[in-house]
Length: 625
Image 1 (cartoon, rainbow, N blue to C red):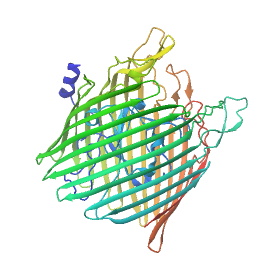
Image 2 (image 1 turned 90 degrees about the vertical axis):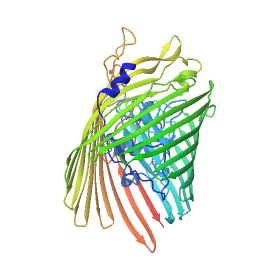
Image 3 (image 1 turned 120 degrees about the vertical axis):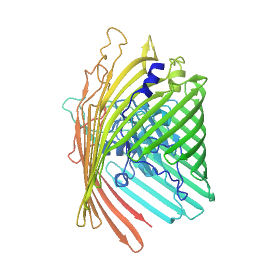
Image 4 (image 1 turned 60 degrees about the horizontal axis):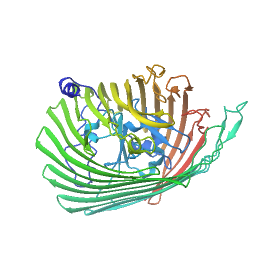
């Protein structure tokens, strides 16, 4: 291990990068501390989801948005069912998820269900590709997702109403109200989403593949987001935010099954921030509480509570150096159907960015975590970018990063009764990557940005559950090697009143098992299940005189259903088309949009024997005051 840590600092580099946050703290906007995904990630690949893409998904989940507008693959167990994200060929538990700096991954399961994250509750969405444990702590082996509520001052009154209907009993309602002046800022969001999901599909488990209607797949969801902030002095702010989310859903059965299972999920997230600005420096203190409650079949209940306290000091000691020093303590309580457990986690970290001259930037980040008296792997990271070409209309950057990340075993892994293994050690990954970013402006008509990244990762002590007699138990026995390519292209071009934008994302992910459980293990050297080698998405959008038309396609390559790669889920391509018209009515502004998903009625599965809908539509009306 010591050799690995030394190698991290002796040899450069490898990871992609995009956008740098300003070094200046704007008092008019509350900063979300703990999300250092740009300022201290020089040379790493950070992508923000644009507002136009977010607005296409009222009443739908973050799983739908990421599946259809990025090169990422989500394992969806049906329409509105459990959805888990895999980044760069890692597992769902290797992606860290945050809301306003609060970690959302379940301490018991170690991952997030993206079907429970409605787009209507979110503000800004950013994706950090690649290992980033030094920045965010546990789970960030494949990448991280950052969801933030934007709260601004001096905006006056703002109000918005969204109402939508769609196929298969879909009805969605969203209400937004915000008010702010120089001293106070408030933002309120309420949403309600309902869908029967009673679509038809061709059932391959029955002779002749007859058309069959899905039963027991309804989803009902509602939630409330409230964010409140106050400038208590010229150099101090206090803010609080909470998010209450409730989802009742029937569990869509496998094709050929008639099971009638149900599940209720309740989440409460609350954060309190105090920010003190001391010239160019800043102090942040955060309190947080995350509660997850799950009731399965109205009999089996699982509850976890995470209480968090953190402090950070951001130091701008010199013009070319930015540093943040922080400590975070989290206490986790788990009250599940088969066990009770609690755990304390203490993290200490130092984040640094150095820009010796305009063309060069370097980030050096360090983090050490202790949980229940045990040390998680020390997590250093080194990344940077250098501008090779810097002309008025052309820029070429080379980027690189090297890091070590980790994942603490979940509560279920260690304490599930029977089968939990308290002796498990954290999973850990060594990752490096390198890439290029090219930007070109085309006079006054537009421009484009192209980005290509190669990554290579080795994950050790990967935890898997295996039968020991009649009982399944987890062990640190798998080693996995990951390598691949990320390609991104986005551009815009204007011709008179017509404004065109387009994007393309392609991901090649090779994730291979490098360990043998026994001499008969046929998974050795094989691609991990449900990790497509190829995933591509592209989209075009045209705007003119209040009218928008969009076209989008996603292609997902074949996935293996088993670890020996003997069972294959077929590849598929989906086309979506949309139209939106913006209008003004007295002092109100509004829009009417129509979207058709799966335009050519593709018969497909994201997971084996999990039915997905054919052609379907959604109509949405929005009014803004």
